[in-house]
Length: 179
Image 1 (tube, helix red, strand yellow):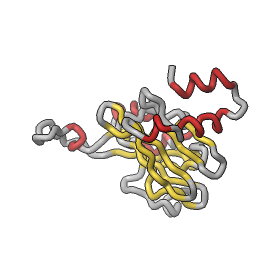
Image 2 (cartoon, one colour):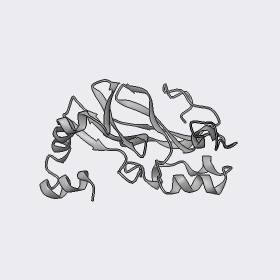
Image 3 (tube, one colour):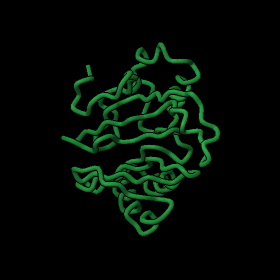
């Protein structure tokens, strides 16, 4: 059971996001394996180092003093549902890559690109990394894999407001690629 679940069960739904915010601003979350990154507009993300990789775990809204879990400890994107994915844009991708989207897996890098603007942020969710992801310090293990990312827009609570979809090139955060 995650820390998030422990708190949820102990306090119920009343003030849950505020209790999480207080906990995530404690000394424990200001040191390894955690790091806080400013996203602008009084938003930040707490990343957690899991097996040597920084994972985007919690969103902090400093205006409302609330926190939201984005990814759990098993690297599943908890704010993403099947309805938040534009499946038709994944039709031409290999099934083994689409499987990571079906599992809502954040095993590969996931980032907020460009921070928050007008209460929204673009998330890049890699469902297949480029070949250098597999390479060790000596250059061994590099594959010929191509990076495949889905892009979506979230609000200040992590709720998906524009579905995650595949683009052949990275879209701009201003929405020029969004239908």
